Amino acid sequence: MNLAPFRDETLAYRPRTTPLQRTRLAARALIALVAAPSLLMADTILAPTLTMEFSSAPLSPGGVTVLTITIANPNPSTTLTGVGGFSVDLSPLKMTTFTGLGVSGCVGSNGAPPAHATTTASSVITIDPTLSFGPGNSCTYFFDIFLANDAALGMQNAESSNAITSANGGTGNSAQAPVTVVAPSAPYLTASVYALSIPQFGKTFLQLTPVNPNNGVLTGVAFTDTLPAGLTIVGAGSSCSEAVHTGTSTFNLTAVAGTNLISFSEGILYPTNPCYVLVQVEGIELGLQTITTSTITTTNAGEGDGATTSITVFDQVFQDGFEQP
Image 1: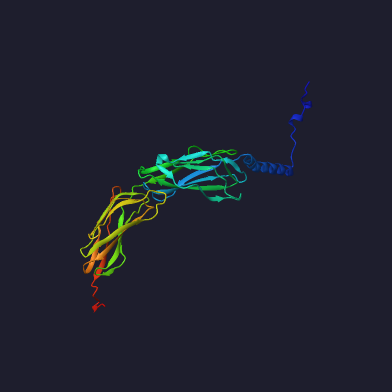
Image 2 (image 1 turned 45 degrees about the horizontal axis):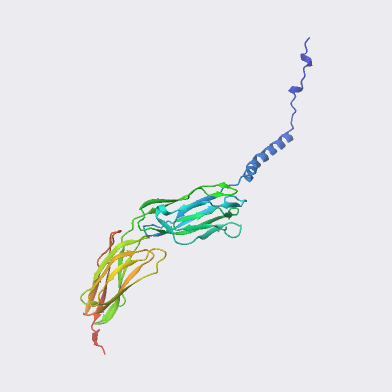
């Protein structure tokens, strides 16, 4: 018996959708597709980010620089807590910090900059995991750094001990800050007088200034100045500006009254502690007296240019063709 005409057709039945139904289904699928990433991100909290950078100014041994550490919360609507948990050891670079923590560059709409628990112990900067950053907030911390006189030349890297962490956003990235230490260039001298002309046996001051053009220390600095026969030394002294968190400039100065030799030797000149020499001189012979120093030498930066200046010693009885009272 042939049962084919009586087979069950229900399995082959496919309901048909109208164009309007198909449009509605497509719209729902599109909405779900667009919403899925945002829903996923809403459940994901991003970790904090860390960047470090030295100032771009050239740096030589004995110089100063600034290290910036920037921490940011990349989340647009979530506060990160327990942020920090890393340190930066500067001792391998022979660097030390010489100021406390400063906070700058904070952005965002969460009010005051985040509280911090940051300590510096000579060469180690420690940022404890206690910071709190509001949505989209970031802060830059500035540290003034002194580079030792015997620091190595070439590319150096300051590194965070580990990646930055947070209590609710997980672990972020570690960071490096490269810096290039260069050899210092030679110094130079400047010379000036307080009065361009003086009467015979009158007095004025000669100022000699060794200039350190580097962001670094100069050692073994030396120069001499033999005054012309028409001038003699009355006395001499020196002055240095207040040292700013670095070494203090020192040198030996010889300028004996009644002689004409000025000697500057064994000088150590820091960029933040400039000095000058002031010598009182007396005009003992008439005419133009030209003062010319030697070159200025160092033990770590070669030889630089000397300086010249002049004083005219005039007759105190006759000046400009007229007898003076």
